Length: 617
Image (cartoon, rainbow, N blue to C red; front, side, top):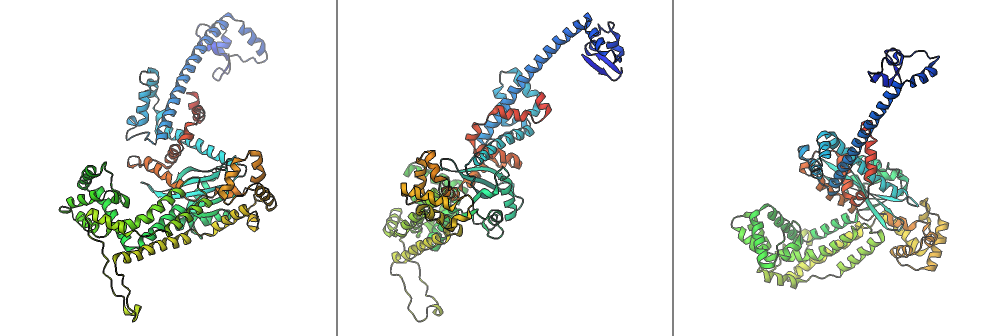
């Protein structure tokens, strides 16, 4: 009850000052102010014996109890309200939905809360009074807390590894507002299973390798040292994989052991493109298919005509897409009938009809002989668990399959007859200039099949040559040497450049392992290690050679998967979203399982601790 008053220059009784009934009982503690500090202890005890002081204190204590209970009840309602707001933001972020619209009152968050609070007058009152706890600023704070929690969990998983080894995957794309760089990390868990995780989107101010490397290093500030970087995977752009000024060069200056792997899926697309462009008939056929898909998207008349023809003739209709040859081969009659229906009123349809009636079927058949096998390999390479050794075995399998293929000219001829197209003919042969051929006679194929067989063989020779060129890299040779050491047990100088590997201990471990097991591939070694108990595996796994082979990614497919989430998040209606909000929303949307495991109570405590006002409310 002691209270110092500046105006009275003395000590007053707090309860006497507030109560008008007791001021005459002891003027020294109610009006004048007590200043006799020598006898302060005695006077304080004497004042407490006044009956009026006890009465006033009892009334004030009851009032304080009532006030405290009212505040506690209000805080309890505020906590329940905050949990509902945070849970609603989590739901919208998980599903990739917009949290607010053009008008905040009509946004998904407000409407969802109104639906949840329907029939609850107290919470509805809170929603109408406390607009700042559903404002865009608070939404950003909640999203940032959720995103940071998920990224910290990923960082903790990497830091908990027995030997810290990871790889970096980066790929870029254009969104509505500019360039976005998707950054992912790859590591090997305790069960020797490779994991690839998305950690964020970054808007790089420029396109140089140094600027992109700066964004990558910004991600590595999550207590993940650059010295533990073992691999990096990008596409073939100069600012990414350039050996002098790309991200590859910038990171290798800090960590020379970060082996680079050119994205295998990207290489495979380049190989397919080079092989298909070698043959003129294949190149032209794919171009006409692309034009057909464009016409299907632009012309509502053609789309409706095709849908009616296909559904009546061949069952449920499917849409035609650009650069998709199998769609045309499956729905050939429907396409031709639709083009004939459109030819009289559309110049483009008339031109496409003429081109499809002259040799396009053969070009599509030849293209499918390459594209089908490449598509199977592409799907295998893009798996998160794909390893370097597994990728090489898959490539050799596809290469051997391509070399054994033969051109089936009869199937193309039968399809031409079934569709009523013009007969496949040999194109006009031009005589080469004399300065090139001299007096030698020109070789002319006698039949159309002989002419196209040359293009067929040329196409597969190009694909085989591209496989050899694009899948041979200096850093891949290092990984091949490590795999050879693992399988043979003959340790060489390749091991000495890795500080986490010991030549002597690795040689001893490999001798024990090969005495117990015999494996012909690194995948077999991994399978045997997974089947062992933890104690037995410790005898062979301390060298970490297996982890080095597994941690290097094959493709940048994980970064490209995040582009799908980006397309759904940053639409034309959400084009003004700031980068921090976009990044946190993308992390929550991509890691839905991790978001489901987030403790809402802990997020609420972090949110409340951000300011004194929030803590009080």
